[in-house]
Length: 485
Picture 1: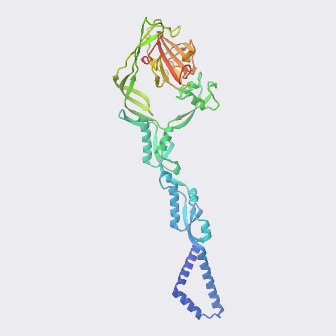
Picture 2 (picture 1 turned 180 degrees about the vertical axis):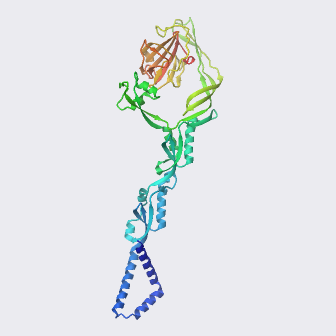
């Protein structure tokens, strides 16, 4: 390659000098003095003319170029070094445009100055597309590691900090009525410098969605005696359909045996925000219902003498939350804004008992717990033109619910508009009802403990959607369950 370049330089120098008028004139004068009869002279002149013609032909049919060599492979030619370097820079810019930066590469890129035939140059001009696919780019970014697990890469330290701050704000939602005193991650988080392909670098919004979506975690569960899919779901804070879905071929009717191993597949958040603070919220005070016997009314008939009206209170409480879910709550102040108005109902004498064989007594009971965790979708009392004898707690079909207190099951089965329902006698004249179930896990005559799973949420009977209808019955008459929970 070096010898060819020296030859090119020599020929270029020779021809340039040859073109100078004075030199050409001297050459013509010289030829007049030459004795053409001398064979030696004629041979030297002929050789000179041949070399001159060859040089002229060579320069006319070739062109200078720069070969672009990547990792030892010649990928094509550029007209000059500056153009070759510009093409490489454009390719790296194109590769990094997804993150708005010029990419870098660890590939070995060389530039070799050559002179080649014009035809070869024309057929082997460097292609930016070929270079784009041949050069391996990288971007210097910042990776977020959670408990030593690589999760996502961002373009800079500032972007990594921004996405973590956005994640915290998403769950804490600070405002004038939610003063967040502290917020930190439960997991061990580290941010490290990394070199990755530009396509692996995420924007702040993309990284936020990845963190929010969470990670799929798979574990193995060993079936215990008396286990069911619903009990397993309850133990592991899952839905029954998710337990079944994690085991291909299983249905809700699949029989599982003690000692059998099944898969539990659930989505677990990458990050857990533990926040502490003080909230000020407006809460509804459900109105109470008072029933009076009116002998002027027929048995079983009732009349509303005074309409009930919910009250309102402002509650201030300190809290500890994990990803927006309250873990502990301590009320520090309550201010009643609107007093509730009792609903007074006059009813005829001799009401029919709720269920034959239930106990009678003072109606006193303490320590009753919520049978299901969820928002109330319908309160006790006159609602939407009718009297609602309990509260409706929102739930998902198949979700387990529990006994509000210990007692004896006096009824478990189909009961008209209640659908599949359960009555539990807790003694002292206190009975609870659980209605619209999709499945019952207890039978009449069975003793149950407080907190024991007794059935699954459903929408059987007269129901518009999946929920648990819960009643508290004192000596045959329904009362507001919220006064006992």
